[in-house]
Length: 460
Image (tube, rainbow, N blue to C red; front, side):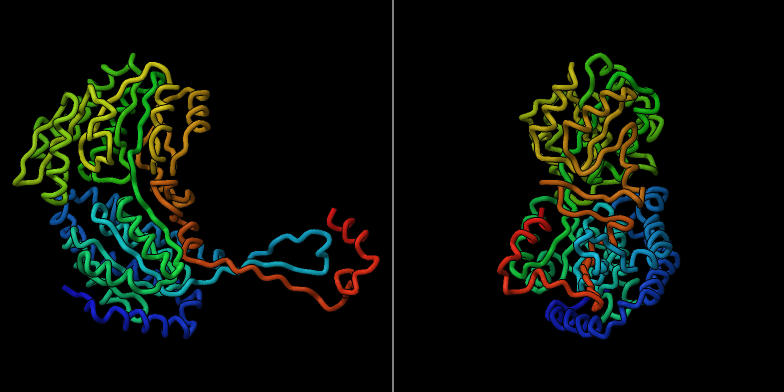
């Protein structure tokens, strides 16, 4: 295992600060070169990444390419647009500033900290790192110790391709995180749960460090009657059970129109069999729960409501079958916290107002899903609910569109990233106003006697 000694963290950060002061990272060509290095590193270590994710999560190779190694797309997008993003942008000035010009200069923040989660342990470290590099920062990277094999691969890749004075990896558990959070950074980017997000924000407050918190929450999925049932069930099945449900934007629970509920359940059962066979434990395409602790937490949810599909589990394999639960009470434990596993509660409604009211009675989710072709219904849900993002007639796919900022609101997060939003997150946008010498109006200078009528006119 390649790791930075915890006692040496302060020295590594100071070394990065010294390197940042050289101005080298402000060179856009340097940034592009580093992004290309990162891409090459991923390509050359594809097999190691696949094997690490198989060891950590039993992640199928196709899912690894779709949801982890596909971060290469983020790199390509940044390389393509970086020259434009980094240019100063003209800002408009009003007529009373006619002798002035205004521009906005994006500049790097300095040394940033990126703390990743265990569920997509490669992609959710590398994706924000792309933004940090593109914006011209140095970075300390803290992968999740729970996904230990992937953490090790990340550490080896970064150490092989980058000077630790520029990019460095710190591996370890809670102690490592505490040591890092005791230091001053210019930005902290954290992906994980809300409870830890509060700890990150409290630690950052000590130095007034800005934070991006990519959290989670119970993302609802509304299913109306005006749908293509076959497409709907496949898209819900995929979005919920990819990575065994361990996805921050997975549909957390279904809000289903009562008249279509039976057909939807039947369709989901058929779709699950098509995806994973009669016995998903034998499927090469179905992942496992990350740890025994998380497995036991999820098994407790199976006591709630009525299991209509699935429910089987094997502690020795950390396997929980894709599961649908009916007759769920809002007071049940499965409805009190983010599930983050392959368990999908079903709640019926008779009028969309009920579904909207339920969503609005809870903390704002990271994602909201709606299956409906009814434009009026779509507009009503968009207008009357708040969430980090919305995807209509599909699930999870919104995360793959680089032009859409990705992030939460309220309990589901602070700030966003992806595409240009990543560049902006790791940049300070410096306002620059410039006057000329060809004219100097005297109205603002003392003495002020007799000038008030003119000033009122100008300000009016």
